[in-house]
Length: 470
Ligand SMILES: *Cc1c(COP(=O)(O)O)cnc(C)c1O
Image (tube, rainbow, N blue to C red):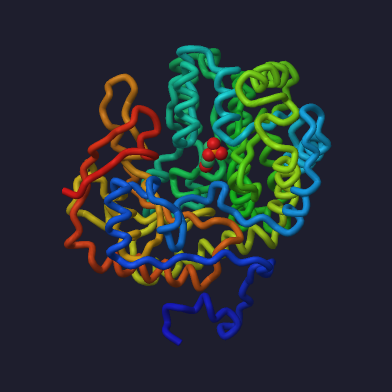
């Protein structure tokens, strides 16, 4: 066997490999296209992978959002949907699943994560307040800004360096938080916005020690901590793997402890929770709950369905119970690691350490000859699709958008193309095919030209922007 593939040969090297803790009961055929078809599709899509029709995509690594495979138990749960307008039995199942597994007291369902972000931002942010957070997320920051807040990044500096091997690159820099408190006063801080794991930093986790220390600092000043719990199961796995004292704890125990240091959470259930649609808010404060329960009626639906069908809430409740399984999370992150290790062995520049939900290709290192305004990460996503029909997405200057005050582009330090792995969907053989496609695009990197943006939407431009080749 070649030296570069030891991970597939676990037993031979005296190790034990993991395997998926499920088997396949139903299959969905994939389409294979020609290069000419892909060239045409890409031009029609304005070189934006969000604008491609999925029927022209072979392996879809655009996002892990809503793209998971549900289990037979979840599908069976769909048949138990209680579609009553009010007080659906599935709502109560969902409520108890969140209470039991995450540990918060009061629950508000929403149609997806941004619905939850909208409500909590409107409920708690006063105009002019600062919202410190461990690196921004697109929809999170936008809702904070629309509510009149000013986002400020307080992630540790290591997070901005794709090659830095810090084990908890999602950590909050407490000195940065202290400096904001000193400058603006605790009363002008809406809350600390903590995400675990940090998507935009490459799926990087926050340590238990860090959230504990943040809790102490915030208690001293009376500042709240709200958690973006979207990928907290993955964060819990990294704590189990990397943090002293947690190797013998279960994912469930670690998750609950982490959440206990926060005051509330919002969730995109389309990620960790293994459903195709859904979200929720969970808080411990009754007054805040009342406010959210009032707002949800205006924007989402009654507080016992929040934009979801009864059957969706049932699938979500079961998904939460499945997602906290140690076996599940180990194979989920193991698959991401497998792909990352292959690329690393071939010298392809990726963000390290390898994160929880995706491999992030370092587009600046891929295409050093492209200026950031020539959209290197967008270019790489386009090239990868053209080569093999694999769909990825840009996480760089296009995603970063513009400063609302000056109108200038944000120039993020990280210019990344994300290969996001859906949960329970693809096999190890698919990962091999993806790795080989990335290698082919890497080998052709020197002759690759960049892009220019020819259409720019006002909000979250990366979704609908159009590009042309330079
Ligand atoms: C996806 C995501 C959201 C937004 O959730 P949607 O369900 O897409 O509306 C918020 N935060 C993070 C970290 C996410 O990944």
